[in-house]
Image (cartoon, rainbow, N blue to C red; front, side, top):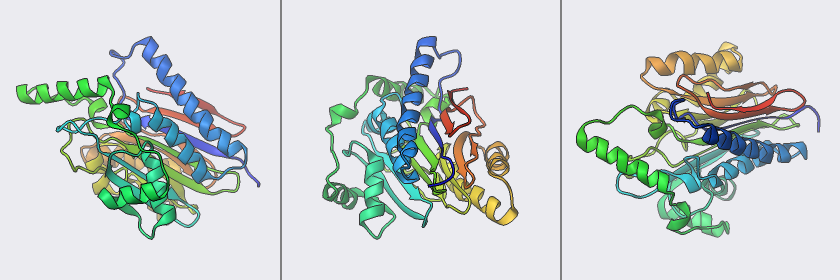
Length: 308
């Protein structure tokens, strides 16, 4: 092995506003991000692969009920939970994704099973669940995924809809988790997982499991995991657009990601952010909204977590 590793994680751009964020909640959130960051660092510091590091980090995020993925997934308007996830290995641009699933404890492991055990990229429904079971992954009952805060958020949203008072709260629209990494060999990987939007229609799929929209990795350019208004990210092909600007226009990761998130996304009526790492290990974490739960670690250099 040669070189150094880089890792970035996010817990979504749908942060609580500063006025609603208590010191206790802020401290707990940063502590959770730090634990997740340490999980990914542990893999990379042992000369582990980027794809193993992002898998471990996103599993840890899915197990934290404060984030909208896995155990903390939000509810559809029908009172169900439908989860999406994707993973991409930049070494050969292999990818796997699942959408609309319920049952697997860690949807990101389901996505990885699709990548590693099938000839497909994106799977849904019973076929996806069959792949998960064949891989021997853990399933959980509904009570494992239920959190009172998410249920209450659904009831508040439905009440506001009935009263015609629905606001534009990003914490209801932007919940996603993700990780990107460069390992010591120079390989890149990205992983993203989400429960979607509070009170979304059943069957709605956002950008997170769509390769090139919310998730992308190519050793020649960068690894990206996005969070925000999924429909806009889908229309702009955000993750691939950044890689294309790097590859075809010679832009740096910071220039390309900044141009897409800070200019194009807003112009298209969207908000959110992303995390990215390039082939040289540079990290970027742009967002155009109030904040983004995030953490970063560049071996021998910078490390930290932030919300706003």
